[in-house]
Each structure stands twice: as structure tokens, then as C-alpha cells.
Image: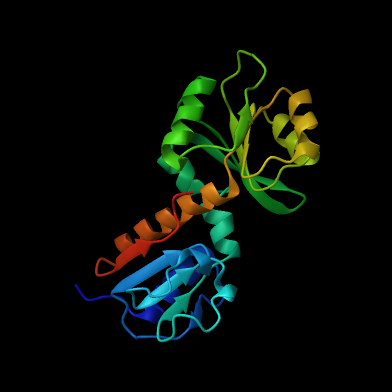
Length: 225
């Protein structure tokens, strides 16, 4: 199969994630092998690839000369980590997914998971993401395990989603200043891990690129989470 062009990959990233200039550095016009990493430190000194995708691409500098460099930052964080990650919701079979807008900003989603127990929910998340940083269960109650996947954690957001029936708050990093608010509302909390969710997003991106461009081979570095 014909490999994609470097500009074709950039156009796809722009359309999917809203990155204005995903092409950070020119390179070979055709890309048969794409190496993906969250940051340059995850890459070896020499990479067998035609181009790189680096989430934090500003740190690439002049390294890996001759290779094209692609990058998406804000759109990657929004769509592929915590927050309004509809891809993760589909992967985990969540139902009744609704976006959470708070103070005019899209902050995440609420959803109902297929699991009806705390242990089952955590097991599903661990199987998909590879673990968690920390957690505590919600207060006992007859309500279903409605959850929120959010890209921030503060008392205002916790109060906002709790008022909508959320019982479990998922985010990247635990914010101690918001823990008391979560416990006061009886919410369970799972800190999935910032790096862990980014690594999931990178693997997901590689899979979507291979599906969109059948002639493309990808290798993901530093994605163990």
C-alpha cells in the first residue's frame, strides 16, 4: 500500500484535533514509518522512522535531523486523556455520555459504565489503562455508578457534577485541596495518573493513524504509562 504523505498526516491531525500547525518540521514527503512519543526524552538517539509525532514537540530542537516532526498538544490533551475523552468512553462501553461545560469551558464528560460495582469499575479501568495512582470508593447508596471523567479537580467542579448525580470522579491527578469536597459529597475518586492517561492516548492515536492510513507503520515509545 502507498504510504501517506507527511502533509497528509498533518492534515488529518489538524482535522481530528484542531491543531493549527501540526507539522512542526519538514522531512521526507512520504512517511512509511512513524515513531510516536509523549516527549523527546522517550525516544532513542537514533530512530528508524521517516517522521516523528511528539506530543510535547517544542522540546525536539534540532535532534533527529532529516526526520519530519508532527505534534499536537492541547487537542491531544482534550480528546485523548482525561476530560471529554469520547474514545475512552467507547472503549469502556460507557452509556449516556454527556459533556460537562463549566464556566463556559468544556471540562469533561459524565457517563454510566456497564459495571454496577466499585470493584468492577476499577477492574475495567485498570485493564484498559494499566492501573491508577490512588482512589477511594463512593459513599454507599442505591444509585447507579454515574461517573465523571474530568480534566481538572476543584471544589466547584465537584459540586457541579455531584448535583447531576455523579458518584465517581475520574481525573488525572488528585488535588488535595478538592479531596474534602469530594468526600463531603460522598463521591468516590480515582486518580488515573497524568502520564498513564497520556500513554493510553498515544497508543490510541497510533491505532487510529494506522486505520486511517493502511500503508503506515507506527512504533510507540515510552507508552508503558
